Length: 217
Image (cartoon, rainbow, N blue to C red):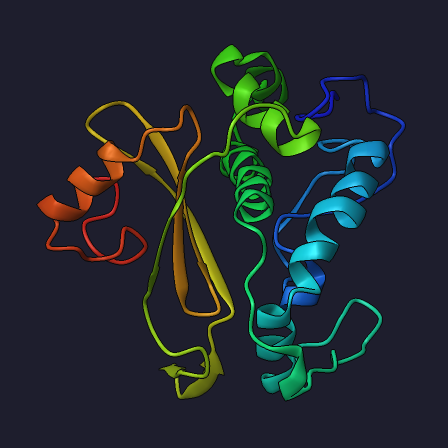
């Protein structure tokens, strides 16, 4: 096993990588031990995810929805804290990290998936941006899909939808991460900094979300 970010041998690593942080309500979507080495796992937890989670906007959302941290604590938020969002570059790096992990997650059943992801040179800019903060800002799209506290019903069960993700393949042979996070849809191109292919897809599908309408058509 090699780390999908730094490419070093990671068979002896012990950390379980959560694609979306546990403090955002994710307990199920994880990568196999070694997919992300302990060093990169700790780096993202301290330098990227923590800053996103501690931003006023995410603290407000998590506090209002009582989303607990991995230690079982609900974050505190006061009106004086404001509602500022994470820095654009920081959020881009967070999405780049999630995107590469979702791509890996989607290919786990493919023989040789680890080598395929690690050796894919087309992903090097993305992984270097996410892990080593190299390169110019990586653009991403954002729009609201539903209210943060919207309730959904399935099989007579009522629930809140905290996050949802998929990979969108466009007619340009591009792969986009599409992530719904607390009702906000975010999209990022995993192979480059262009968003045109995503905009074209939306125009061709009446601006429906790739998570629900005409997915990967």
